[in-house]
Image (cartoon, rainbow, N blue to C red):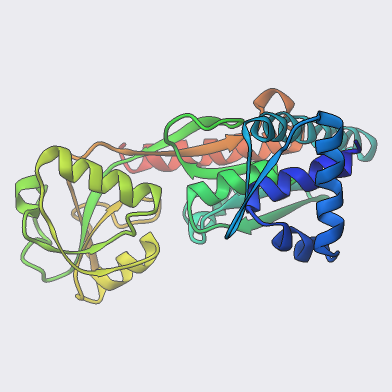
Length: 303
């Protein structure tokens, strides 16, 4: 059993496919199978169950996959910390997040961090959902993931940074644009630009609607908050979105207006890591810089 055997096995369990892992590693499917069979011989049990559309880990396979993934992650973090110690104030901080997150939550922090650490490289990897960010964090050498905070995730520690109230985004001139607040009853039957239900924020909003008895309509669905805001600004629909930094404050003049919806529970966003106590110092410094920037923005917005 080798470390590479375990790496390949974890990749197969997560991909659910021997051939997909072989493509990623630029090797043959037979080579991947040989590594799995070697682990099975040493374990003395089957680790994968072959199915018509791929493979899934057996009960024993899940135990080995979880332990191997945690051990590999710990080794990678240790090696990163050793390299940071050897190189001084240089190296890289690797972050995964959604496509529009950097602009909304990290722009100011990036400038501040680069001034403090000019020799450090910031590397960003885009995922389409918090679920994708969690998976990427567990399966690679990423340091941090910016996510919508949710329930417990195995092998992941989450730390809230800021709570975002929900607002209704409308075009200036809309009958609702000058309201000081929106009651949930006002949303019933209203055609909304909807966030995708498979996203964490979209699912959280749908759950809040269901709990409050809101039956809103829908005239289109979009992949992210910025697209919803753009459609609202163009007068192509109303959008219920989190009040991300940079949005016009309620009552502010402009082409896009936002109206608070106090009854909806805020959306919590923040950092996810594998282990905070093993986070490299530079990654921790970047996480703290972003948190400070977000706290400043929230205070300026009166939240």
